[in-house]
Image 1 (tube, rainbow, N blue to C red):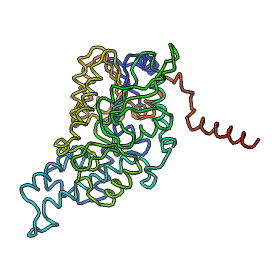
Image 2 (image 1 turned 135 degrees about the vertical axis):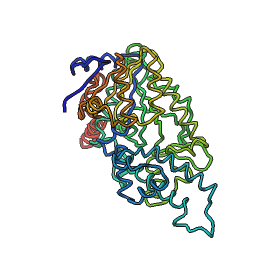
Image 3 (image 1 turned 135 degrees about the horizontal axis):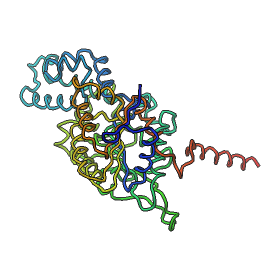
Image 4 (image 1 turned 60 degrees about the horizontal axis):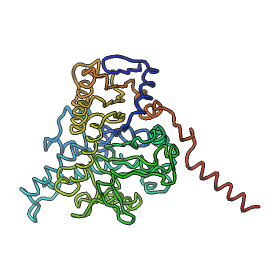
Length: 421
């Protein structure tokens, strides 16, 4: 496929684009917005794949959703189903039926609307969870997962973003709609601290003021203070490692504990989501404290885009979330904001004047604005996550193709050699 790179209304060359990226990485504030597509290369699924997994796992789910008028035949034909939005709608329906037609001893349990909706909801939650594991279920929770080859580009992304920071500039901001732990695992592997809003040694709870804190070397003086030791992570739609039991605070727990206590039971058919254990989008969540956490994450996202001299790189995000789209469009009023969007199907959208879904219409609208502060990259594989990371300027502080694991191995070799003397 040919490559399409537009800055405003002008088509630019790849060399000009690389130069533009280099300049943006020197701005006062830089961040990334990652969607499902950014995790596909390391074992994740796109929203379309999640839907296909759900209907493969339980083909009856289509009949149920059609019966409740939650999807249309057109959605099915085009595989155009946003599972996150569907989770929200099924949850609302379930809440209504529980109040208006509760289960009782006289009910036919199998055909009762509450039972049918609960089965549908469980299937959807299972598919969303499987998409976010990234690794084999048995391996989820193991140590040093970030060292695996599949997370190479996540490690490289963090290294590049941090190494391009100048003295006095803010640490990189990471925003993601994904539930997976790819960024956390990659950061652990290369020794980077991620400030994600949670703090505590034995019990990690959400405290929004954590996003106003940073790490620095207290012994470094002058130019030696160059660079950062951390980045900020905002998980806009929740995480596999967040839980809420009953009415308690939102907590972050180790992945191994999340697996044994919540993920394994869910995938085996236990509806633990009904007790507010795992944190996923859903209308009922906003009646609990999780609404506060989501609200704070989105507030920080909007606040970041309003800052002067800001660049944000968007990759793997299909523009299927109305709230995020609205924030991005509104942020364009900031004259010093630069947005770089990697959208593989750009050429298809530009050549098609009809048959576009709402997400594609949003991209077409952004392209039609012809603003120089918007750069859009198409060309299919040229806009994938690995290509995006390769486009970013090479690290200055981090040696190329050298990971923390290599350094640890070298030190261990030296220790063993010394013990043998």
